[in-house]
Image (cartoon, rainbow, N blue to C red; front, side, top):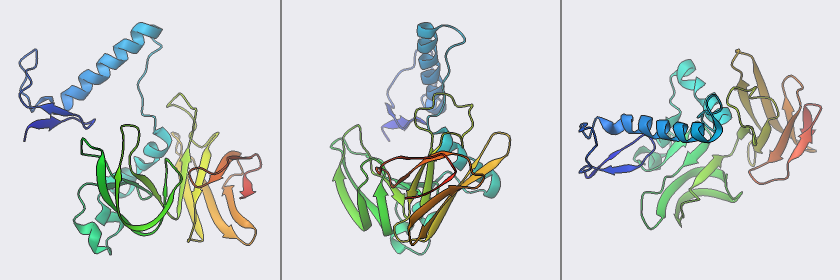
Length: 239
């Protein structure tokens, strides 16, 4: 082993010498604290005290997934076998994972950017490009600004593009991305800080895909990851 890994995934050489003489392995998590502190101080210096904050940009998606370990003990990042126990190919996959039940991530571990990964059976949609693919093995080359990130069929992903504050109403001004290629229905529950919740449901109808909020609140909707965004002022729309 020639490096230690931080919570950000960087590799720090084992022969690095810390200025205070700290043991190398004890810096595994402490490094992330130093990194965040340096970023915070830089922001504070630019914008002034009281105007700096650090937060997770995936607060809506990641925050909702963060409730699952509390409710049912299922981790946010989970092995492929957890979501696909009947797929023998998923039993030994150790270079990709599911981010919650819907999103598949295959990190790039090579300097060349080459990555091989496996999509279980079914229709998958690339979150970054909108490409659709059937299950099977794939081999690709990625740069620093891309990564294999796929959404499973039967998913509803709720995000808040453009929001700049983590302490917000997550179900307000929501963009609901719907992935229903072969399934009939799908839904996503968004729980607020006060414990209230709203459910966004998508179901196949003869007229198209109906998307609705459980309490009639307005939102925005689109089919897939790259479809046109539609305003839904009355809480229901057919796409």
